[in-house]
Structure formats: structure tokens, C-alpha cells
Amino acid sequence: MTDFPISPFGHDITTEEIVSTMQNFKGWEDRYRQVIQWGKKLPKMPDEFKTDSVTVAGCESKVWLVSKSVDGVWSFCADSDARIVRGLIALVLAAFDGKTTEQIQAFDVDSYFESLGLIAHLSASRGNGLKAIVEKIKSVQ
Image (cartoon, rainbow, N blue to C red):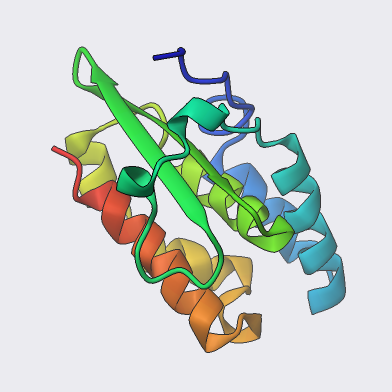
């Protein structure tokens, strides 16, 4: 299996920086464009990782998520066939990649998403898919 692509998220950008950036935008359209831009920076998942066994159930779009733990620190590689979902994945990885199980479990993702001002603007299916991605990450042991 190929090593995970190095992600610009999780280590190089903090959730605080993401929140600050998003809160500087006046409207949803600007936030949406920024999420798309972050999604473009997310490395493409190697095709060999994209198997049915790593798809995230509950997502409207196709989403693949793989994880590995080295010395108790989790790394995630995720991708989607939808641009906005790739951006949402980038936001999720910023919160969870490079963290221990304890840090992952302790992170208040609902507060994080609330501070981004996104959830109210996502369709119900996108919101449910986002929650499914988070639940899959939080289920790692």
C-alpha cells in the first residue's frame, strides 16, 4: 500500500485559523468559495485506496476515508468525487489529523462547525454526510 499523501491540513493550518478566515467573510457565497479552495489543496487519494471497504456510508457523494495510527497519533487520507465535499473533508482533517484518540474524542466538532457558519447552509444530505465522516473518524481506535 502506498503511503498517505502529505496533507496541507491537520498540521499546517489550525482550526483557529480556519474559523478566523471563515468569520471574516460576510456572506455564504464567500465561505462556500473558500471551502472549495481548501478542497483543491487536499491531495488526491491514490486510486488503490479507493475501495468499497473504505467508503463512508451516509454520504450523498462518494467519500473514501482511510486511517492509520503511528505511535498513537492518527493520520487520515480522505477524498470525494464532489468539490464541496472535498472542502468539507479538508475542514474535518484540520480538526482530527495528527491527533491522538483522546484528542479526537475530546474535540468539540459541533462548536467548530457552528463557528464556521456552514451547517445552516448545507443541504440536509450534505450535513448528514459531514456527520458521517466525523463519526467514522471518531470511531477509530
